[in-house]
Length: 73
Image (cartoon, rainbow, N blue to C red; front, side, top):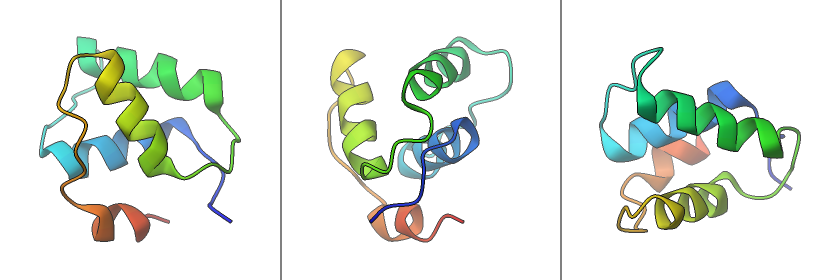
């Protein structure tokens, strides 16, 4: 079973995977926050949510850094 989804974990997973800064207040961070809040507490795999988010935003749905994402606290 996966750890419960939080906004912070989701943004960090996206940042690790994409190597983007995701600074507070930016459009991408706001969109990541909105997406994660709607799913907060879910125990579905975070990588599944990353793929969903990427597809919904026209980003190629590949995961580049699954080991680092799996190691998130």
